[in-house]
Length: 244
Image (cartoon, rainbow, N blue to C red):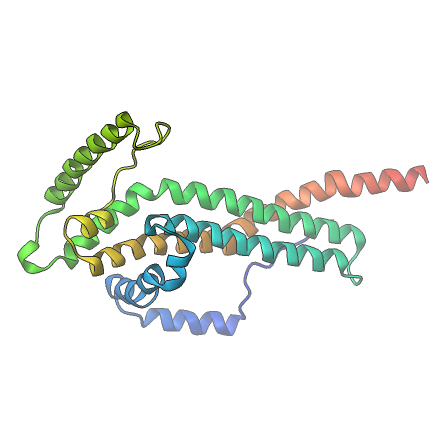
């Protein structure tokens, strides 16, 4: 018995209406500016985020973990409702529950993996965005900005190693290169720009996790869940019936 998984929670009218709205939106840069100023930057600097983490550098990880936690709650709720649904065939309920669990599991693994793989490319995009936000008296090329950040990281790594040698830091820690958002905050002394750039990192995570959880994994996992249901759930049920 096969089941289908409906990944689209919107009606076709809503879909068309949303598409119509999206076609009327400004350019990518304009939309990005709006999201960063009115959503991700305020989120990053909010009292809630400061309460969640002592150091703002940890907020990116918090964004990942909070999305996964939300998915655990939602998935558990759907699995419970599915298994308790008396209107569904008992065998179909098991397949649906397997489908829901595998969708969550695959989504989580893919989201963390792809999010990590995109770090370098997203950092490059963020640096290009930084160049457009620099004031006229601080304008520079991407090459010069990259060189400055690289040299700054070399100095930071030397200082980090000195602290490791002196016992100030845990010897098991590894140096993590600073990104352009750190450069804007600590070198350029521009907290507003730093918050926008940190918001870029949050925006990436929201896009990656949202896309995979809502669209990619449900479609990819459904055939696997059907196969598991057919191979393990229904065959075992048929064997038990024949034995009875």
